[in-house]
Image (cartoon, rainbow, N blue to C red; front, top):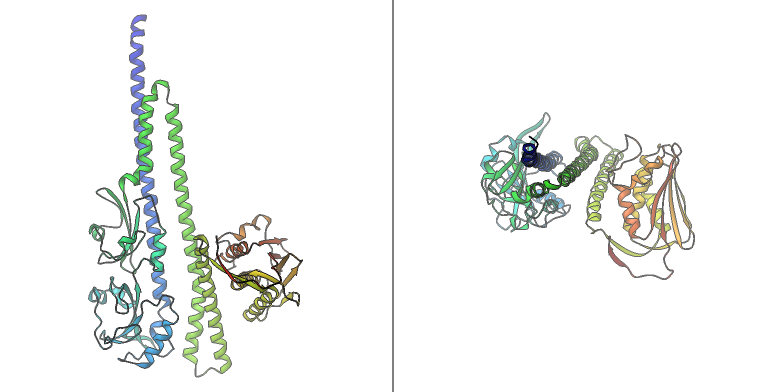
Length: 555
């Protein structure tokens, strides 16, 4: 009996190893499937977030441009072929556009081109024709405006995306019949602002992100060779949104309904799943060979792989939350100044004859203040992008810091005449080597921060103290103060104010620190909660003799 049991022992051990191998294989297969599913959900969520963000930008564009289509100067467009008034208004608009490689033009109710800028000779008086125009005019989007497919532009030789904004007859009861259309062409090119945003997206060696229109033309992509080209797979036009498997590729599609576009992510299946499947398969083979010495190695590797997967999911979740927070902040903050600009201008237009000169000046001044606020927000966002890409440029030269402080304070007083701002600065020059524009940006950010975080009845104190080798600027408010644990965090991106009612993008202090660092200085905050805060920065004092200007990118 004992011999029989001993003879059965090797078989029992072998059976035990076989059972263990099967169980481990099942566990690995299940873990691989769950990991791939989690990765698919993560990528799908990321693509949907990108599509939703772009769709909201289109909605904001058509919403904010609704006042523009009624006439740039307040009076309706004449929409008459060759109208001098319309051309003057369009040329004024062109002067405000950053990218003038493409232009815009007006159509009357019969789609005849009546006036425009950067149009070729002979274009006036001709009928506007574009692929997909008839289908667009018969859709519900025609009433609010929209986007047509990519085609060769009228105002440039490059391919463009035309944005169409309706122009309605203005009546006492509101918008009347449609009088015509405002058409703005934006180029489809590698160096366009939109494509630069998409170009920053990356996942692995074969991961491709791209937007395409209803005709299948790629509008933007992180692969420059795809821009302006037709899709190489027509299934992307007809397949439903979500994750698809097209042969050797994983494809995730999401709709941008306001423009009729789609955003797609495509990657080789091997690379997409390789980050999880490949290592797990290797672990499985090693585990089978290592069963003679135990299963510890496999378990340890599995736990390690699962931790990596969870860390990747957490990173993607934080990235998605940061993106959504940024979209929410910017959308919310832009809404108020845009409404202010439109509100004051529309009030002036509607009541111009009944308003006195002082009332007109006040309305225009308030609209201009809101426009400056918009400009500051846009500058902060662009500067943040340049900082992170190492492209923020400083032009250094010899300047009087005392005079720069006085200029910044005077500008702050103009924006808030009821606020008392006390200045203590030496009468003699305090010479430093710096970029005047960037230092003005820092001073404006700190003064604006003090204004927003303290009662309007409380003064703001500004002091400039040179000590021979350095010069310190201190801006003190009498607001609620800052908790000790937040004194460093407030210089991070998207950290806003000291209360729920404080506005802003949360980028001002972050940008200010980068600028002061580039000047070889230091900036910090001091505060006693309930007794106000003081923001200080120190710069090295320059040599007495004049120094030649130098240009330096922020590194």
